[in-house]
Image 1 (cartoon, rainbow, N blue to C red):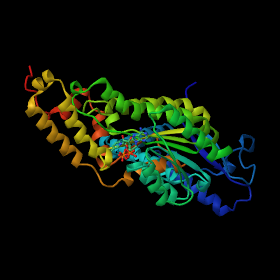
Image 2: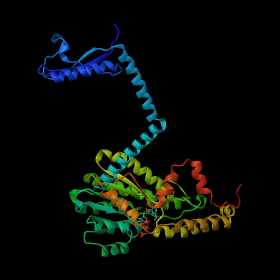
Image 3: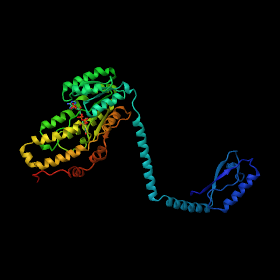
Image 4: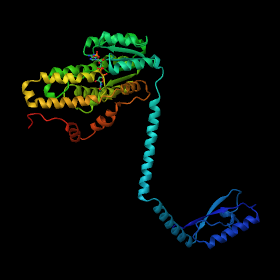
Length: 412
Ligand SMILES: NC(=O)c1ccc[n+]([C@@H]2O[C@H](COP(=O)([O-])OP(=O)(O)OC[C@H]3O[C@@H](n4cnc5c(N)ncnc54)[C@H](OP(=O)(O)O)[C@@H]3O)[C@@H](O)[C@H]2O)c1
């Protein structure tokens, strides 16, 4: 038995008027005149009650076999519909619709992320934040900024002078302590002091900001001590402070914010600075994964070039490294190389932005937002050049970074 095309029929109630009956009849006639039409209306009293005819007041549907012409009509209209559909849905239209849909989805994603990132954590005025390297630069500005926001700032300063000046410029909420991040005793003492200050509440945030930037230059001009000098502050200092403060941060289910650099994504010059910052990135990444289960969030801030004291020391450190370099190294590189490298370095340092808020706002966001980011690229040079360039294939990045580099006197 084959599948037979069918038509749906309305079942009319017995109390339907004759008029309705006539209308139904005329509909039936017109349906017969148009065999291609899929649905045919017939009066219910033509169907025996035993087969579900006029049995209720509800409008029911019954099925009946269709004549073959209707099948033909259906095929015809099907062909017409698919023709219409294909002329409407050209591949280019489909592609465009798909891209528009994806763009709308992406737009929605960024909109909800933007909204959620704007939500700040509650009770900021009761939260303690410890910052290292508050004598100058980002650390100093951040301490003032968070103090103005009403947070309880605990500022680590390298010098007594730096601590006194910061205290004078801020409210009574802000407290300072002397801290040299390269000294294990100094870090332990600072951790003890912080513990006393915060009590049972724990420490909401620790910002590892202290850093030095010199000497930098070609690796061959450096000694192991030069590398250690930077690494002990910029990397080991970060690790030591973090480990000592972590029990207090875990108690508050707080935040760790590490100030790295774009030089921790793209090594543009030799010396200890880039390895130290790459180390900060690696340490922060592994710490973030460790801390997931404890409710502690870890963020990395990657500033580009900013006009602070650290940048002003770079030129002198470079000259010093050249002057100290062994005579055979000086011969291999030559005076011209030194001068050209020096010019490039000065040019690079002059691109430093004066708007330090780009960095401190990122740190503040990492500390106060309900949804802190894992990484913050701070500064236009970071966002538009260094970070995108760090994703390039190595050969392309090498070409870009070395195309203006001078050639040594005794190059092969
Ligand atoms: N400026 C930039 O272009 C830039 C770019 C990327 C990343 N960064 C990073 O940003 C952070 C802050 O630098 P900044 O630009 O604000 O320069 P900065 O003004 O020189 O600040 C660095 C701070 O760290 C302090 N410090 C140095 N050695 C220390 C030690 N052993 N223990 C404790 N504190 C110490 C310094 O104290 P003194 O002032 O007393 O020396 C100073 O207060 C650094 O980690 C740096 O690597 C800076």
